Amino acid sequence: MNNNIIVNNNFNLLRLIAAFQVMFVHANDYLVNKSDLSWYVTKILNFSGVTVFFLISGFLISMSYAKNQNLKTYIKNRILRIYPGLYVNIFIGIVILYVFVDLNFDFNFFKWLLTQISFLQFYNLEASRAFGTGEINAPLWTISIELVFYAVLPIIFLIDKKIKRILPCIFLISIIFFIYNSSSDRNLFINKLINVSLVPYLFVFLIGFYFYSYFDFFHKYLKDKFFIYFATYIIGRICYYYFNNIFLDILVNYFIFSFLVFSFAFSFKGLDNFLRGNDFTYGIYIYHMFFVNIFVQIGVGGSIYVVYVAILSMCCAIISWFFVEKPCLNLKSKSLYRSRMKNA
Image (cartoon, rainbow, N blue to C red; front, side, top):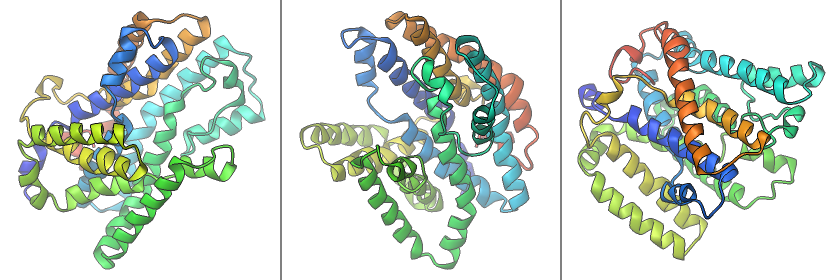
C-alpha cells in the first residue's frame, strides 16, 4: 500500500465540518424556532456528522493499528487520544451542574462519574435532568461507541487475517441490528441498550476499515471524483425523500455517503492546509452542548445564540487542543500524530 497517497488527505477538515454539523443541529433543535434562518441552515446541513466520524475512525484507526500492532502501544495511543480531553470536559461539566442545579455528591453521583471516566458515557446523571435539555452532555454517547470500536479493532484484524469470510457475516448482522434499531420501541430497556451499543453501528466502522484495507483498489475511484459522488448522493437523497424506506436509507446515507466522504478526503489536495495540522474537532464536539444547555436553562434562544454556541465552542476547542489534547498526543508511541495523519 502506498502510504504517500494516503497521507495527502483532508480528514482534519472533514472532521471539523462534521463537528460543526452536529453542533448546529443540536443548537438549532433547542434554541431556535422553525421560522428562523438558522433552522433552514440546519436543513441544508442535513447529513450525519456522527456517520462521518465513524467512517473516518474505521479508516484512520485501521491505518494506525496496521502500522503498529503492538497492543500496549495501541492501547496507550487510544487512551491519550480520548481520555485527557474527556476528563477535563467531565470536570467542567460537574462545575456547571454544581452552579445551576442542586448537585449532591452522593452514591448516584459517583456511580455516574465512574461511567463517565470509563467507557459508559451514555449513562445520564439524574440530577442533570433538571438542567437545560435534561442531559449535561448527550453527545458523549458516541464516545462509548468509539471506545468499543477501538477495543474490537484488533479482533477485526485477526478475523480478517484468519477467517476472512466471517467478517462480511458480522457486517450483515450489524445491518440487521441497525434496521431493527431504527424502528424499535425505545421504552424497552433492551432496545435502549442496543441503541447505545456498537452493534447497530459496527457496519459503518467496517466500511471505513474496508476502504483502508482495499485502498489501493478504491483510490482510483475516489481521487478527484468528489463531484460525481456529490451528484449521486443528491439524487439519492431526493429518492430517499420521496420513497422513504430503511433500505434506501442504508444505500444512500451510508454506502453512497461513504464514497462521498472518502472522495472529499482525497480529491482536493491541500484543502485543509489552513488548519496547519491542528484538530479542533474533538473540542467542538464535547463542549458545544454545555452552552446549549446553559442557554436553555436561562431561557434564551434565537439564531444569534446558535452563533454564540459556535464561537464559544470553538474557543473551548482551541484551548483544549493546545493545552490538553496536543501535549498528550505528543506522548503517543510511534504516533501517526507526527505524520500527516497525526490526529488518528
